[in-house]
Image 1 (spheres, rainbow, N blue to C red):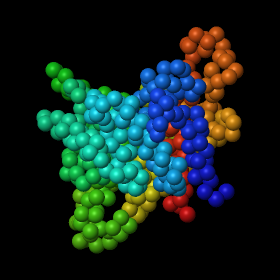
Image 2 (image 1 turned 90 degrees about the horizontal axis):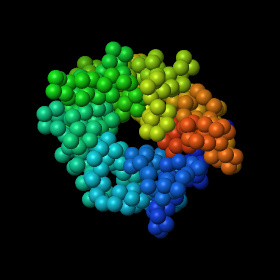
Image 3 (image 1 turned 135 degrees about the vertical axis):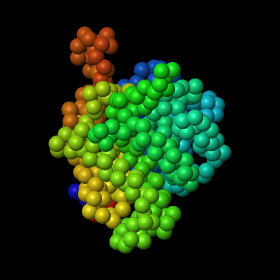
Length: 398
């Protein structure tokens, strides 16, 4: 079937729009994604709304518009941005979490680059807030205001943003700190460091999305450095002069290779399907983690320069991880009214959210002791994100 993954991404998009997309408090020309399906009253009223989930939703909307822009997709992006700002009830910079703000700024910039919206003061304020939040002692961002926990989610995500918006030196400083302090023996990034009175304390947990954002930051920096010295993305390094010019970018490309090798060996099945590490939850925030990794694996598969055998091999591994994961996700889906429901774990069969029409299947479910992860927007967005990544890889392989 031609453009198979693009068609499946369309179905995932339709599932989210059908089950989750809703106006904010009946206000015209607004849109947000309800965080559960079927939704309880508080969720329908956006009492719970999850700022950074909405940023990921916006990113997926931009993915779909990038594949095939139309009036409906463009309108939904504009209405979602309006919904986020109105639900936040004030300036977006009032959010205490720097990773949340970085995710929104990334998605917003992509919407600007896609020509859907114009750059605004609110976006500039969001970017400035991230720059102003950098700790003068450590040189990096804390997880949130007033914290002494410095982690990958806040810093690698912000580094992607800074590299894309012309703040390359700052992106390099932050990314270098991440690799200097949080890289483990398997080539993977640990979550963060908490500064204690007795000294720094490393949180050594490995999360899939941290590998994704580190890949994204490294790729953006490497490509920007090549641009700075006049090397095109596909120009081979076949002379000493080019080797010298590309030397700075090689530091980040080497890390890309190492992370992808680590993901393939430690965060995927032998068949190449991405799996959650033992301590990574499949629901709530954790439902988004594997999809974010897939997004940046696709970025590497499509954009990493093909100037060496090592890079070509790395691109192939990244593409295989995306496509094998997408195949497993799709084969384990459920369908309701012709639209997919995705499993939290991409190697497991999807389960029907327990209060969908037929009611709970056991007493424990009836009293809320059993939670069906598939009910969460995060889980379904992650599936959509993976299929968009697969569609992008598929298009590049033509």
